Image (tube, rainbow, N blue to C red; front, side, top):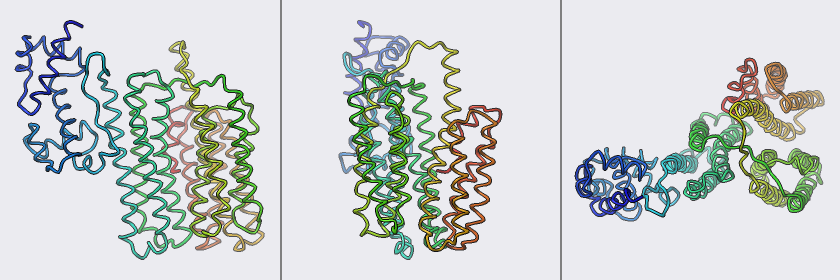
Length: 521
């Protein structure tokens, strides 16, 4: 530690002369060290090279001025020793994950990496900076996507007459994703201090994966809404759908990067939760029953598909013994309920007077999310596995997770398919109703198989059933003409699931794990 004292003193010198021309030689001379010795001690104490640290401090200080002053970006760049706007922008983005202009616009929701290493204070962490950089760029991309969505109303006046409220709903939900990620961003320093906090790391990865999931969901819902109304508007809104799909792809990529920074998350276990967990589960189940039954009270309204799905979630939660309830299961339930609530929001846009029918859904959401948070807070690491055992466990879990993801995605599509059949109502004759009942039944068969699937043989069987569902769905959508466009869209998504399954060879985990990326929803 004594050998590091001069290095910490040199940090004060750097702060004092940060706007001047600094070199390794001049700093080493002030500390009475050789250039080589000073560089070696500095890297050991601070965790990075001298000039990299200097550059990061300049970027950090310039970021404060960009956010808090009206000086031009070029003026600030020159003040901190950069020769051009372009060079400063390159360095700023490499450190912050965003450009200076983006930082000035969005600084209230992104974060400056911590780069100082003070003795008896927070240790410098390259991991912390890398995570902040990745999250900053993702938050900016989310906000730009939300702004792009808002501008669609101004750019496409004719389409906005039909979709203005829907676009507003999309933009608000996108902004909400940005806010949730910004809150998580504030915990990164704590994670760096306590790298064994699995629950904190899990929440961060989950938040990014939520961005990917919901970006795809919003793209799908946009295509479905357009198909229900005026299919000719599809080309107008294609750039919007592509924007959300690009956001989903980038979010998945960043989730993988950050997971790499954290290494692999350990398995989560849950203990000592009986009394509190039972009470929370009972409350959630009661709220769910209230929400579902309320939507089934009037069979003349087209909302039974929502009520049925809510009660299906309630039955699943009720049927599982407490000791077998896992955070993954609860997360899936929360996701499914969010999707149901999103569909309900869209239906309310069509019939605002029916809003009171859906009020209990939000109460069920709140209770279920509280249960999820409670179970999540009980997580802890599992240690002591041998290397071979860990690898075996990971591969097995990857394959099962792939099939589980497939089943989850299929449930989403089945939910929407049932909703479309319900909305078609009197447009269907008895023969068509029977056909759709058969299609839904075959889809349910595929999903049951996916929930217990293990390898290639199961994958081929599921793909075969999905192929049959696709063919039948396309046939019925064509028979319905313009009214069948939404069914056709859902059938195409089912076809994507089938194609994803075909990539599996010999049950290899690589094929399984790509399912999430290959299936659009």
